[in-house]
Image 1 (cartoon, rainbow, N blue to C red):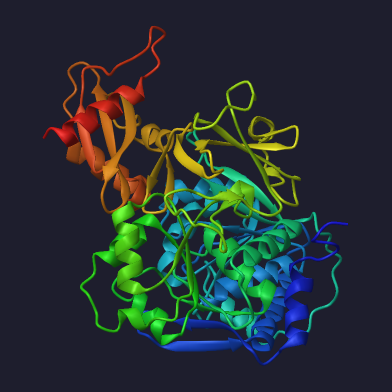
Image 2: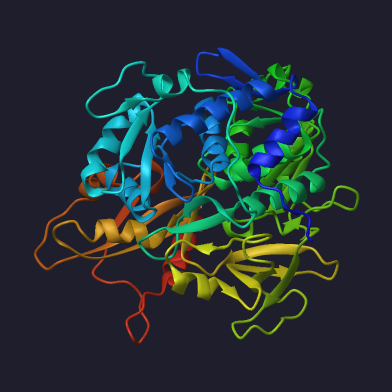
Length: 523
């Protein structure tokens, strides 16, 4: 038997409720700084009411339920309510316009969408094209309409007890859609065992305990907030302070106000916090550890720790790996310019394209050993080809290029997949290119990431027009704004007659990146 045993999300939550029902689990501070607090027992009661409401609406074990919500307590009630009845959570980006939202909702075969009033128009705009959807629920509304039911009304009279429903550890608990190298995102299947395993593995690497409190500012539809913040909190019986969104100007004030001891960040939010005016009280925070991912400079690391007195720990993980297979050590020399050592429960190798292990300081692809559905993802939903390409003989091929130095520290080098990192978001260049190519008069579009001091990378599009066509850069950008989330929209458009290509016509993006780097160094 492994570390998960027979546990599922319901068992983990209800064990903590029995152990300390009155202890605080969730604090929510809204945009007006109004605070709501839920003990473990109060939270579980809301979860059970939500679960019973879903059952009354016909949701069965294995059904998919879409959460199209910003950070709020209801997201949490739904997450655990859905999984307690053996259904599957499908969270989507609340910034998604209809064209972008339609694919994951339809592809996942979601039967219900739960959203909020300001996001309802986008949900309704895709409903006719998503025939699996049977009901739309809206939080914060007390009355039903022809188009949607009131979430609050549905749960208010539901019992706070929930009947037993058989759930196996390897049953799917969520499908998390992540950008791929093609124009369509892939749905990562996350099981109950995955959530339990990563909660155990990550909490141990952080030495998390019941007295810790997470500050959660990253979006809940992301794996990061689910994996690193809430599952670790639940696993050890700690507490979490949740905000609707990340705010650089409020971040340290919120951390101090709620006496948070740990948090998770990306490099871009860290730079935004560092750019804020100094506050005499900012060093009085209670942080003992901040885990982060993605590259920051040595100078930024020094500024952070001297200014905020908040120790940093760089890790590496992706939605597919569940926990972090690489993490800097707590009790050994910490090198936050690296992504650390292999973590407990993981084995990592660096290989060439044939799968042969490379030598010291030689870049190669990172592959991670694991058990699908337990320590790594179960696979991609309805995408057998992508699953086979990623999971091979017990190894997950990450698509990321790393190297290992003589002391055993792994260092991130580059991405083999054509991805752009922007303020913590993974953006597939192909997704952006496919939209631009639909604009009248566009013959081809090539998208790359270019360095951005604040947000890791900006998006630049090289556009080739049909002969005789007249198109402006602003027209391309406006067209993208109507069809994609803001963070996917290119900031720069350059028109070309052609771009560097191989003899068989493949675009040589590395040469475009070299051109941009040369321009940056020699403006």
